[in-house]
Every structure is written in structure tokens, then in C-alpha cells.
Length: 409
Image 1: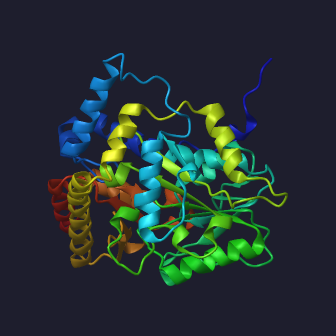
Image 2: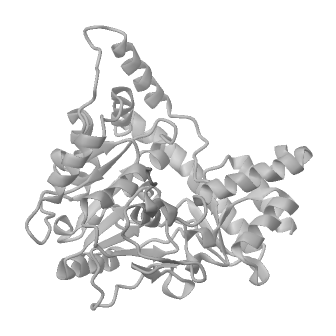
């Protein structure tokens, strides 16, 4: 008789956002008259439509698929050269980072890559994550059998090194103790869920640590487009030595609205090699080619336009729209007396639940009393308990209405 993968059975409960969705559905069933009043600022899904130049590129690529002369079948599994070359030039060379097109791997999104990247590391690799943290980093390593035993009382895994991100350290982790034998470090800046950012000297310290201790940093830069402070790095490859210790993951979802069309990429430099000299770039290429048939041509053509003069202008206006939403939420909640963080150089607002409430108690209160939905901080890790995340990706009306209702509490 067959058996299920026991590692999957170790996962506690359901995926965080599935639990949130389930609670909303139950509330709507029990309160149908209030279902239409719900303001959803929980899941970080964009609401602005695709920019006109992107839509035009999609239409043009669809027309190409209708002609035998220009039809495309399977995409190159690592991505079309026209997009990889554009990414290398605009996202890296323009910032003084030396990344070649053949180090760029186009995919169907940053979430997939964040979950899959662990496959090229050894089964006994010890993982270090920020706490709180995007759940995919930990859950994907649980599925791989790398995290040990889960402690329901603490919410911690025995074989994972947790790096607390608290108010006291500005929600940015401290370097691990030198005695910890860490192989894989996950960093995300601007951060999801806290909205925290990291300056270049502090990021350089992480790069130096990784090179000194033989660790690899998986750097999630999905929200770099929201950075306005010139002192903040957009890429880890702006730091000296990052090519020998870092993998960077990027997304088209939050900078260009591709949450529904799916496009992202991962950078793995040729210089990144394991203790035996094995090229991690080549391993990722092998994994990519085996398990992925390439992002659709239509979507990659649309992604190319994001870097055009018109595309950059149009998507820049959308990013500015969400930044303004973040400002409205941040300042409105501060006026209401909440302790609020993030929301600057980042699309997430991180607030302290009032009166010692737990994260889920605050979630229930907002849903039941004012029909506002966010994400409980405890769902991102033990250090998130007592905090709550709101996103700036809703409509302007939703941002204003959410602040108004929460103030009414």
C-alpha cells in the first residue's frame, strides 16, 4: 500500500492565507448582509489594471501566435534572450551590478522560485530565517524534510535557526552566532511582512558573513520597486562579494501588476559554488530545465515592455499610487494612536495590536466589528504575535475606508 510523503504531514494547519480566506468565507455565510462591506487589505494582491503598454504588448504577442510565421511553441526553459538581456541591463548593469543574461532564469513568479530554490541544496543544510517571515520559505523546507520537529507550544522547528525581527532591532535581523553552522539564509527587503528596509552597510555585513562562513543568502527583492531612499540598495549584487554567496529572486507582480499573468526571475551567478566546487548556477539550470517548460512567450513579451520608457512611466505611476495608499494607512493609524511601522519604501504596514490583544483576536475584532481584513502577524512566526499586517495594494477608496473604520474603534 502506498504512503504519503511524511514531510508534508509535518506541516501545521493550512497555509496562512488559506486560513484567512476560510475565516472570511465563514463570516460571509453567517453575515450575508455585511459581506459586501468587507474591505480586504490582507493578501498582497494588486488592484490596478495592467498598464496600457503592457496590454498592447500582450495583444501584439497574441497576434503573433495566430500566424504560422511568428507562432511560438515551447519557450526556452531558462527564458527568452530578449527578456534576460533586458533584465541584466536594466535591473543590474544600470546599478553597477555585474550580472550576465545567462545568470538570469525567467519563471512564473517569485513564489515558485522561493519555494523551489531549496531543492539544489543538501538535505542536511541548516536554514536560517527571519522571524516573522513569509511562510513559503519555511514551509518549502518542511516539505523537503530539512526542518526537524515542530514544537506546537513555541511555533518553532528544531532544525531551523530563527532570527528575531523586533521593534528593538528595527525589524531587521542580527547576524547569526558564529558557532551556528548555517548553510542557507533567507532575507527579504523591503520586508514582507514588516515593511522594514536595510541599508547597504548592513546588507554588506550579511554578504561578508555569508562568504566567511560558507553560507548562501537567498535574497527576495520582490518589493524593491517601492524603494525611494537613495541610500537603500535595490539588489544584493550592489554589495562587494555577493556573486560568491547570494541568489536573488525578483517578481513582476508588485512592480507591474503581473499577479494574474505570472512572471518572475531568479539570478544565480556563475561564481556561486559549493564546498566541492559545484556550480549552483548549473544545478539550478538543470532543475529549471527538468521541471519547467518556460514562462509563456506572450507574458515574457509583456515583461520586456515593463523596461521601456513608456512602460516604466506607466508602472511607475501605479507604484506611486500604492505608495500613497501606504502613506494614507500609515499616517491614519498613527493619528488613531496605533504603533505603526513600515509603509515607507515598502507596500506593507505593520502595526501593534492594541491592549495586548493577540494577532488573531485583533483579526476577529476588525472583521466582526468594522469588516476590515488584514493578516495576523503570528501567521508569519512567533515574533509576529501581537502584530498585524495591512497591504497598500487595495483601491484608494479601500485604503481611506479602512483607516476611517479602524479609527472608529
